[in-house]
Image 1: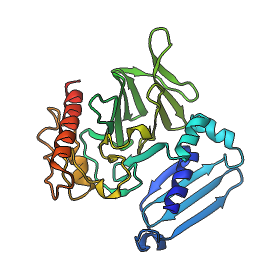
Image 2: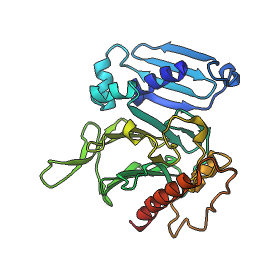
Image 3: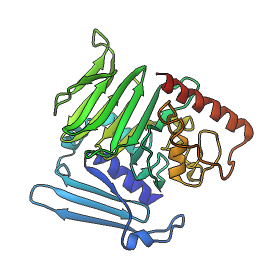
Length: 311
C-alpha cells in the first residue's frame, strides 16, 4: 500500500512526464503478496533535467526530461492543474486511470495487460442513472499514433484522432485548432460556462471539463483520466468501478466476471452498426455480484452505451 501511494504521488506531481512500461528485470519477479514486494528508484541527472524511473513488480513508470524538480510551481503550470486539484489527487480525492493499446492501470491501481479493440471501447464513465460523462478509445491501425479517443461531457463531444500530420481535434464534430500555449475553449455564446478546455503542451493534450472537475491527458499512446472520488462505485468501463476492491476489476457490463482484461475491453465495445458483429461478446467465467446488483448495473450501463450509439 505504501509503494502504491508513492507511485500515485509521483504520477500526480509529474503527470506531464509520465510514461508506462511493462515490468522487467528483478522487480518484475517480486513476490506479489500484500505488504511485500520490491521497489527500485533510479535518478539519471542530466545537465538541464532529470530522468526518474520507478520500478515495481506491477508497473514501471518513467518520468523523462523532468525539468521541474527544482521548481514545483513550473510543474503546476506545465500540468495545467490548479493547486487545489493537485492537492486533491495527492489526498486521494481524485482517481487516476491510464489506458494504452496494450495495458491498463485502473482507478484502484490494478495493472492489467489488455489488447484494446479497433472499435471504440468504453474506458471510463459515470454510470449513474443520469450519466454526465463518458470516454471511449480504440486502437488505430494507421502509420501514426496508435490510439484514438472520444470524450462526451455535458452534452458535448471532443475527438482526438491520429492523422499523418499529428492529431486532429474535433469539438462537436467540427475540426478545431489547438496550438501550444493557446488553449481551445468550448463555451456558451457568452463564454460564461466553459464546457471543455483543451491545452497542448508539446505533443501532449490536456482536456479539462471544469463543470464536472474532470481532467484527461492524451498523448496518442495513452489516455489518462482523472476524476473526483464522488464517482466511486458509480463508475464503469475498462478503468474499473473505482470502489477500492482489487478483485472486482474484471466485471463486465452484464455484471459477471470475464477471464482477462482483453475480454473486459471487448465486453465494453460500443456496438454500433460497424462493430456490432465484428467483435463478439466474451463469455462469463463467474458471477461475483448479487442478482439484484447485477440487474441494476446491466440496465444502467446498457442504457449509457445505447445513448452513445444513437448519438
